[in-house]
Image (cartoon, rainbow, N blue to C red; front, side):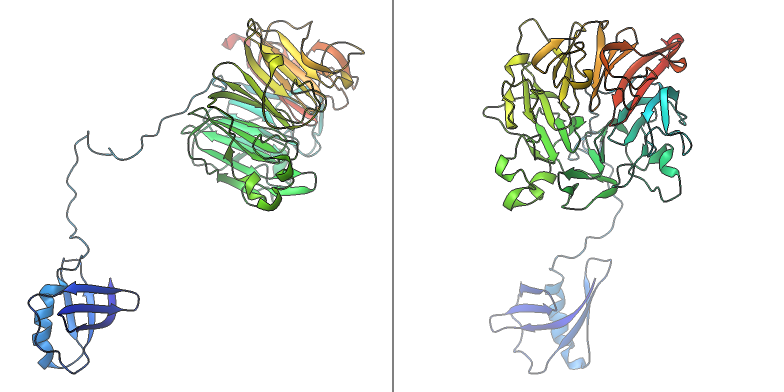
Length: 494
């Protein structure tokens, strides 16, 4: 480092070295001779060696003063001398560095398979190219490698590959694909998202995508919206076309997305939420602040913050509907918050819940709940015995309870489905994946998401069939606004 300045003694024998931005005050010993009446300007150069060389501008008569200064200036803290670092023992090396631990959760998918798509794909959400925008039956999607997880957003699709990379396709108007799609047609086929870390889970909403990495970090891209339009993602009114890291103080183990909100479950059992709060789906924003954060602004909504309850609650899982959230505690209690205008939360009231409510309708000493999924106005849930239940709005047959069924405020058993291992909801459709590897579908048929080949609504479960399902076992299913994605594997691989 080089600085330019002046150096002089005051009356009590203290040396002041004045630079443009720094004053160093150093006690001098022994006291110097009477100060010269001439101005002395010094140029000091910190060398790689642990001492300073100071040269006067002119005047050999001042060298005596310089000699007396040298020992004093050398006492100033200098850059340390570069030496070869001593090798630390294995026990000491890295002792102060936090050890990265890979996160794990029962929801992480580790069985590779192939991807099938069906439904409407006018903006590329089927991934079959520009010429194919509709499929009545499941169609095989071409990908460069096998896939661990698939998830359908409102109008886009996300695949987590066997090598822990993320592939996306579909609508990219607000950055939900997380990659450049300026090349014509590039959004209509799978493309890799650039992420420097291995991903263990993905989630997707209407216009956003999130990825959980193996060390518990969470990346997000796209945008959240409310009833008035875009609200931003991490900063007000700013969309993110590429992945950005979410600021959270502890590692996450599970992520879940609603239409326009994100829920994180952390390793310590805390729950963080961000996004739109209009219907109470964040569980931490009072109703009078829910419209764009009120006087505190959008930051209150977009920066992930902890959902707090009276007394300590250790959460182990979370699930999202379009505008509502379920969270499960370590003790097995189910909490809900958000929109419940058709009792989709299981509340007796149809009022929105802006804080977590312990849901008594899920409290049953003989029932252990293992899976939840929410649509726009209905919910599916699964118990440990493989029984599927539904509640909420009944129109178009989405509850699977038969023709003429009315809305339900408590979980109601769905008949005609073999023991299941997973459930999934689209906006107005429902799915159950059986333990034997079949998939049943019911609800609105308008968008060809049921796999029947027809647009008729189905009021009860119908087993999905098709050429691409022959000889294959269904691992999981995910449904968006107008399309559905399945992960399958060949039965001989079992």
